[in-house]
Amino acid sequence: MFAVIETGGKQYRVAPGDTIRVETLPGEAGAAVEFDRVLAVGKDDGGLLVGAEAASARVRGEIAGHGRGDKIIVFKFKRKKQYKRTIGHRQNFTTVKISEIVL
Image (cartoon, rainbow, N blue to C red; front, side, top):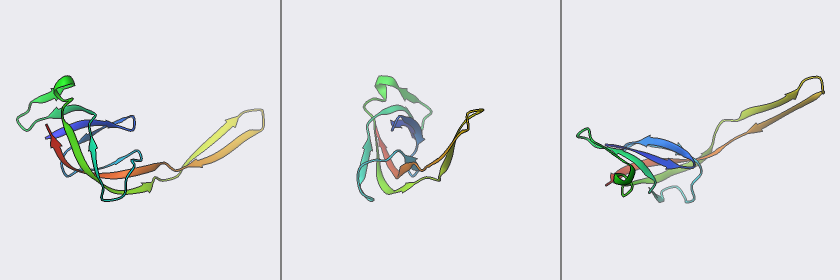
């Protein structure tokens, strides 16, 4: 069984036992989290629930930890104007361990 959830403006395909990195969620490590924005659910018998059928489904998980991603370099440049700017960015994330999909 799998589900497609939306959190932080992004969509993730998850199954029980998966570990995913999502945008930062409130809560400490070990806290339970529930995703109620389920877009689709794929069943073991090959069926697929989408739209209003999947709206009542819930995906439960546990926060495994918080962290920061690798640094990316942003370089701005305008030719002939002597303009150059270099900045770095590290995105915060939360690691979530998916425990179950409830229909």
